[in-house]
Structure formats: structure tokens, C-alpha cells
Length: 454
Image (cartoon, rainbow, N blue to C red; front, side, top):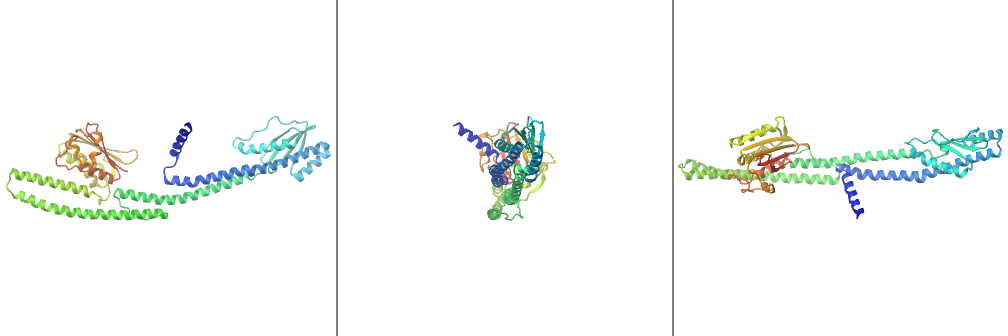
């Protein structure tokens, strides 16, 4: 049971450490196996080849040293030693010197910390070879001289010192192999980076085009690019965008015709009432016609949206000031806290309509209304609209955004409304790539939070 828990914890930790982007994950998929292969090959090379060669070289050097010691023991005269030293120098590349009256060093010089793991196998191989070949006490050092190995053997009357070329003791081309493996890894990683980046860039362009289209921004320069599958997805996106745009254009044309057809009889009725005799019945009919006209405007605005409007860079404070005029005329006490220098890229008329719906809703249901704006830490802007009205229960916030929804028991709805104000406002915010949420206001009523992307 404990093993299963530990496995789940490790799995969650690994999942958190995994790259979140497609570029990072693709790079990991390609580079990680290459790195593991290179490490495995390097390990096998050192374990199976380099150490084997080093062991054989160490055995050969130890045999030559043992021969020199035995030869000296057989004839320890100076003439014989000189002949022995000359033969070892010419045939074996060994420099042999006799140090009368000397003793073996008591300690061995430690290698540098950085190169310790590299010299450890060499020392073990040399130690084993000399132990097998020599019966006399010995001492050696593989780190003091860059090009030589220092070997000393206790002989009668002193110490025999042997300086052997380093390549006689171990294979010296191991670092070249590691260097080539490192260069190959870097080269393969660079090639993988270039190819992966090229493919991911095509996917990023497709994602950016889809996101821009969702905000109502046209990207005319976008063309299918990248791998075959990515080009297929981009072509499908372009076809979908064309179909949606045709649908929007057809709907806009139809709604314009409907609007004209409905307003013509309404205008005739309004004219007939205007020419009629003033009476209570006449006034009631005028109010009914005004309400019908308002309802038609609401329905058409909800169905039409503001998709055809271009995105512009505007000062948010100027837009809020225009929206605030309606709330002031409605008798609300309004306070605006928006930085005049704050600039946003939006569809002005669409955002103005959304903010107007929210501000007028706050003005109708409360006496005090506050409008503020702040820049979000993660990017984008938040517009806060607070009122001191009766508010809405927290469990009915989402219900308030439903089209044609009414929350009569929670907030006394405006009798002229048709339940589309919040729905239109959220549709506009989401059309910009943001959203609208509701919360409890510090003033005691409702807070509407409009989030717009950066």
C-alpha cells in the first residue's frame, strides 16, 4: 500500500515537472532518448572497452617493471644496472633510476577533486597489476606528472624509480571519444531545436489566428503552413471561418430586413396616434408602442451582436464617461475611478453597449454606482461596476446571464427589460476574449467584473 502511495506521489511530481508547451514536450521526446543513448554508449565504452584496454596496458607495464626489478636482483652491479636502464629506455620507453638509501613515500598524492572519478579506475587497475607482478613493496603516482606515471619499488640498498609514459599505463584517447559524443549530442539537439521550432511555429500561428477570430479580429495574412497535418487543420479552420462569416453576413442581412419590416408598421401606428385626439387611451397606446420598439431593439441587438465592428485602440476613461451619462440622467449617484491614461484595444460600440447595460442595471436597482478599472497582474484589464441595490443570491449568478431570464424575487426588474442586458454584456465580453462574472459588492449590492484580455 505504501509503495502504491509513493508511486502516485512520484507520478504527480513528474507530471508537475513536465514541460507545459508543445515545444518543450516535443524537445523532450526527441532530446531525452538521444541523451540517454549517448550516456549509455559512453558508459558501455568506459566499462567494457576503456577499462579493459587500461587493465591490459597496466598489466604490460607492471610486467616490464617486474622484469627490471628481477634483472637488477640477479646482478646489482652498477654496470649491469646501466645496461638494464639503457635497454629499458630503448626497448620499452621506461626511464629507470636507482636511488640508494631512499625509502618509499609514506602517503600517496590524491588527485584533484574534479578529476578524481577519472583517475580512480586507473589507480585501481595499476594497483591490481603491480600486486600481481611484484612481491616487493611498491608505491606509484598517476597524477604528479602530466605525461608520466611514477612507480617506485623497494630493492636492496634503496629504491628503484621507474618513470613510464602515461600511454603505457592506460588508454589516453577516452576523452576524445567523450568529446565527440558531446559534440554529436549538441549537434543533434541543435538540429532538433530548429525542426521542432519550425513545426511548433505553424501550430502557434494557427492558435493565434483562431484566438483572434474568436475576438472578432481578422487575420488576412494567415495561410496554412507547416506539416501536412497542421496544414489540414489550418485549411479546415479557414473553411470554418468562411462558413461562419457567411452565416453572420446572411443573418445581418436578414435582421436588417426584419428591422425595416417591423419598424415600418410601428412608424405608421406612431404617426396615427400622434394625429389622433389626446386621451388616456391614446397615451397608453403610445407607451405600448414605445415598449414594443424597445423590445425589438433588444431582440435585434442580442441576435445581431457587434461582430462586424473593427477593433480600435481607445482610452477607457472616455468610453466610461460616455456610458456614465445615461446613469446620471437616471438619477444615480455615480463615482468613476478609471485612469485617463488606460488604453484598451476593443470594439468601442460593442463594449459601450455592454457597459451601458451593466451601468444602467446598477443605476436602476441602486442609488450609488461606482465604476473602477485596474490592470491585471497576468495581463489585461478588469472593469468593476458596483451598486448598493438588493443584489442577487450567489447561487443564481449564472442564471442571471441566461437570455430572457428574470430574477424578480431577487432584484426588482425594470418593466421595460426583456432579460437580455446581462446576456448581451457577457456575449460582448466573450467576443473580446474575456468574460463577465458577478460577485458581492463592497457597497452591499451587486458587483459586475468585466475582464478583457491584454
